[in-house]
Each structure stands twice: as C-alpha cells, then as structure tokens.
Length: 238
Ligand code: GTP
Picture 1 (cartoon, rainbow, N blue to C red):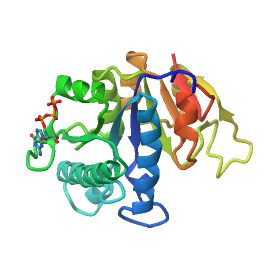
Picture 2 (picture 1 turned 120 degrees about the vertical axis):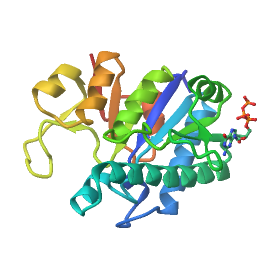
Picture 3 (picture 1 turned 45 degrees about the vertical axis):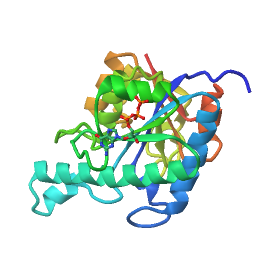
Picture 4 (picture 1 turned 45 degrees about the horizontal axis):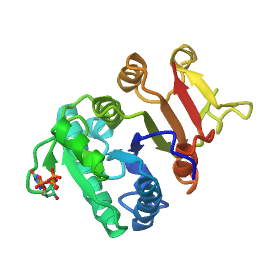
C-alpha cells in the first residue's frame, strides 16, 4: 500500500456506535468490527487514539430531564464512557492490539490517569490509546474531549465515525433534496448552521486548524480508505 496520508489519528466513536442493532448497551459484534478495522490501520503504522462516548449506557442531558442534577448526570455519562473504554480495550487486545486505557477522572485501579506526554509515548510505541471519562469535567461532551485530546496529542485529523456517510446540506431523512458535501470549510458549516459537533468542540478544531472527517463507521473499508487518502465522507477544513 502507498504510505498512509495520516500518521496519527483520533477516532471518535459514539456510544451508540457500540449498540449495533440493540437499543442499549454493547454489542460484541461491533467491538470486533472496530477492533479489526483499527488493527488494519495500526498494521500500516498509523498511530490511533480513540475517544469513546457513553450514550449507549447513559445520557447525562436526558437524565437531567428525569430529575437528576445536570452535573451529576454528566459525571454518570463519563462513567459510562469508562465502561465502554474497558470493553473496547478488552476486544482490541483480543484482536492482537496493544492498548492503554486512560481515564480523565482518576480511577487508578482500572485505567491510567491522563498524562499528556505518557499518552503520546504510548502512541509512538504503537499502542492504541483509549481516552475515557470525556474531559473529566461536566458541561462538556465527548466531542469536546475528542477535539481537546486530538489537539493535545497533535493528531493530524479527527475521524468522526457516525451512522451517516457525511455532512449534508439538510437532514437527508427529512429533505430529499439534501446534498452531501465532499469537503466544506469550518466557516461554511457555521454559516449554514450545520450540526457536525457541538460548538465548543467545533470551535476548538477551527481555531487550531484541526481537520475533521465525518464518515460512516459501519462501512468496513472506510477507515482504511481514509488512511489511503481516498475521498470518504466529508472533510471539514479551513
Ligand atoms: P512504558 O514502560 O513507558 O513503555 O509504558 P507502560 O505503559 O508499559 O509502563 P507502565 O509500567 O507504566 O505500565 C504497565 C502496565 O500498567 C500497562 O498495562 C499500563 O496500562 C498499566 N498502568 C500504568 N499505570 C497505571 C495506573 O495508574 N492504573 C492502572 N490501572 N494501570 C496502570
């Protein structure tokens, strides 16, 4: 294969992407699917960090509607991401990858605390670094954690795995005339009011010129195609 176009990537996986066809929780098939795809990347020499969401187990914002205080709900969501991180670690190691699970909230018995330089060292040694517990602070999403960590570890790109194949001019399920962008600038996303990530996360990427590729994570070959430089999903850049 030609040289990968990205040396270090941050893959953002939503909690929902672990559910598969289930309504809740973790589908082991999905873990195997992602493990195999990430292994292909690592085998090509790409350094991979992952930020995992928690929405398949717990959604902080919805809980606040159900009487749980917002901040508490956010922390419960962060715990959910640690559970997902442990599942990913286990599945990835079964697939033959070396991994390190890191938690933004200290939980030394199950995950390493976050130390930026140590995380970078793990990546340099070919280990997949799994960032869990979001940013460690309430009021932030795991998209913000992805933007923050990607900048901190000097990732070349954020790969945002979703269930749609890119960014559309409107919701394709509601508007049949919606068209997909192959490429779009940060400012156009804002002026068109498109929803790529929450604004905090998006602004952090924009201000630091960190490109984002939104793509369909459930198409098996997509990650490798992106790494080969093929036009997959939508690229957001300056
Ligand atoms: P280098 O030796 O620097 O290459 O990195 P390393 O991660 O192999 O070294 P270390 O001796 O720090 O870690 C050995 C194992 O212990 C790894 O599986 C780490 O993930 C794990 N580990 C390190 N620190 C912690 C911690 O604070 N909590 C938990 N639960 N595990 C840790």
